[in-house]
Length: 556
Image 1 (tube, one colour):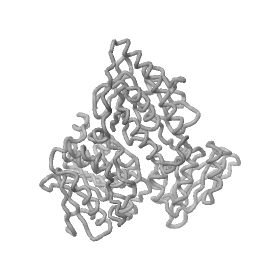
Image 2 (spheres, one colour):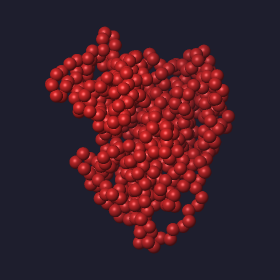
Image 3 (cartoon, helix red, strand yellow):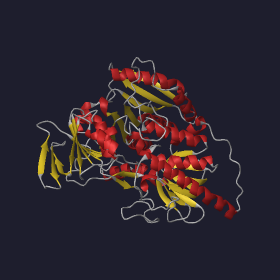
Image 4 (cartoon, one colour):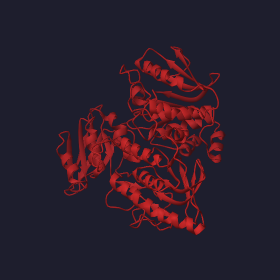
């Protein structure tokens, strides 16, 4: 990563990727900064059928192609948390937990996150029946009744998706009709497993541990009625009640609407010169991939004119850019690994002969492993389960990839670990505090590679004040993280917790694939991921970064 670019794009969803494609193709130096996963929220969408020119795809594949296209023109990518933006002057600054980056212009494509609906019990039962991501949490409600709150695109599409798992899906629409396209509304209405209740809102949910009852009312007649799951049973409520724009970074610097959306003109320019907005963070009528991509293209072409004028003003002669880096060269930075992951739900050693790692993945991993500094050991504690046999298959494919990472298999030995387990150790076999109770597939493959990178060195950089807070932790703490391999929100929590553990020997961070540990799910009544359990007592749901985890540990 350089310390200066012509343009920095904050946000790696379709809007940011589109802007990167256009700016990089115009031969400007471009960096896309994303805090979670390149591709944004669309990556959890299992089917995209309304993107022009693409008959059918999924969100992950669509944005993956966008990223590759941007990289082919020379755009660079960085996974980092942006903490502040300095937008004044000719040279602007993006402050991240990976360092400061200067630029002439910015595209703000920070998106929006799901809103809370505000009914009684929503916060109390978050993770124990109240959920916000059908892809992440739908499987936990297999054979159960599910209520979907909302009447827009997300509620309709996710309601259809949830029929894969739920016994019955009831969609609660506050208005007298859906606010999405008629074609999608008609598909919902014609799905036998779905019941739609218009003019209906949820007033309260409750139960003993998990959700057992819900109170609903008709906002026209005022009629109130209660649903009960029955003795020993529970149900789910998925909330898709619109989105809150992610404008905290710049809410005091740029003009926003009363609802908090970023105000832009027809050229996607904000209230400051050199700053452009794109995608769901902006005030607009339709929030879809196609409009996000359009915003990104318009923002980029508008910025091209601004950058050209800036070069003239400062008397800078543009150098002809070098040839773009190859995919392997880009992959040498672990912070750019969001596109390198195993297939969610992939079973290793299942007899299919496909294996776990594709040749493309191996090629992308080679330059990453080349940066490792110290020899480390991954100790696999195995038993006679199918789970252990899958881990053996995973290890057999990983072992030849790096001379710095060694693997050791130990069977049926009681060293205090829950079996099976992959324990990251130093070269002498000393446990470093990062443990995987999972075949690291899906989105957790990146987490595993990053853990190895942090253990071997040089490791991901930390802001000095974060590093100091980690080192000041004096009380031992055990962190258990329950994940689903298909969850896009889990890796941020996993990587942050294990980074803390690898920096402080008093902290342990163990990852559990919840599909493999039903007793863990039952013990802590987990119905949503990610779920973090500290010292077998304090339970927290939702994604968190290192600073948030440290805050919780410091309170202990």
